[in-house]
Length: 116
Image (cartoon, rainbow, N blue to C red):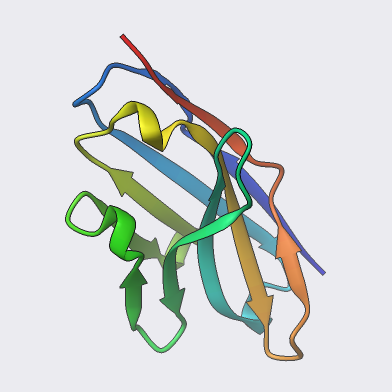
C-alpha cells in the first residue's frame, strides 16, 4: 500500500507561481510512475505531468513551458512547479502513483485557485 499526501495549493494571482508537493509513504519501493493530474471545474480529470522512476519526465502540451515536475527521492516526494499561472489553471490537483503491479494510488487533491 502507498499513501500520498499533497500540499502547496492555494490562492494565487494571475502570473504567479506555486509549487505543489506529493509525499509518498508505505511501500514506496514499489512505485514506478508518478504523475500529476488536475480537474478543472466542469471538466474531466487530465494528465499534467509524469515522472518515471528511471528518470524520464513529460509535461502535457497545455502547460509545457510553464509547469515542471521534479523528484526528491530522499524524501519520497515529487513536486509540480507551476509558473505564470492563469485562471484556466484553477483546478484541484491530484498526485497519482502506480506501482510495478499496476496498482494505482491517488492523493486527496489540493485546490489551486488563480484569481485577482
